[in-house]
Length: 178
Ligand code: PRP
Ligand code: ADE
Image 1 (spheres, rainbow, N blue to C red):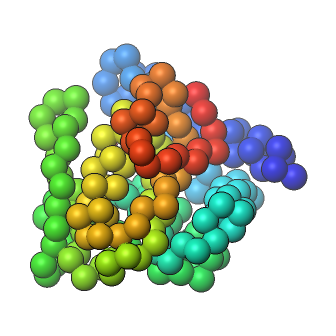
Image 2 (cartoon, rainbow, N blue to C red):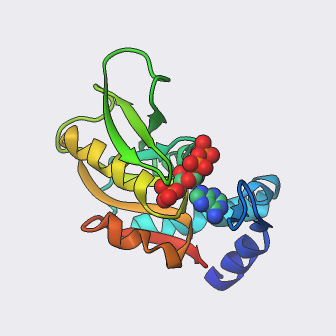
């Protein structure tokens, strides 16, 4: 059942206090990858959501780096392609990029110019939503390419940082909330 799958997923998320810096409670998804049942549960629930809510999706877009661990598995299940949104400077050929703010300084996300066709219906995936800065920039990047953003998906949503507000009008689907 859905409840059993969520329970299994939750049991495979490990909290690490004060990582990578003091005051941060890091939610580690590595145990999910180590357990085939938990990983299957994640992809099952994402697949169910997409088939029920976004059956017209044409492309899964994954975020550097942990979105790359789940995105291709989901794309294969759905029978659609997968595209990488990378941190700046990693992709060959013509690229488009969007800069965004971090707690300290700036970062940039980038996609290959020909990776997404105009009007293509895309869903974005990452492991976790914190402030929403990363997914928000990736959504902007997709819009710059004239893609149709259907929504964003994460395993973990950190509610107190209110990333959902930052993402608006883009929508978020999350499996586990803290
Ligand atoms: C983490 C996480 C998300 C992002 C969420 O990645 O995997 O991509 O932070 O934070 P935000 O909602 O505040 O933008 P991180 O920046 O640690 O980099 P990594 O993917 O290289 O591990
Ligand atoms: N990325 C941003 N905040 C995070 C957290 N608390 N745990 C894991 N990844 C993160």
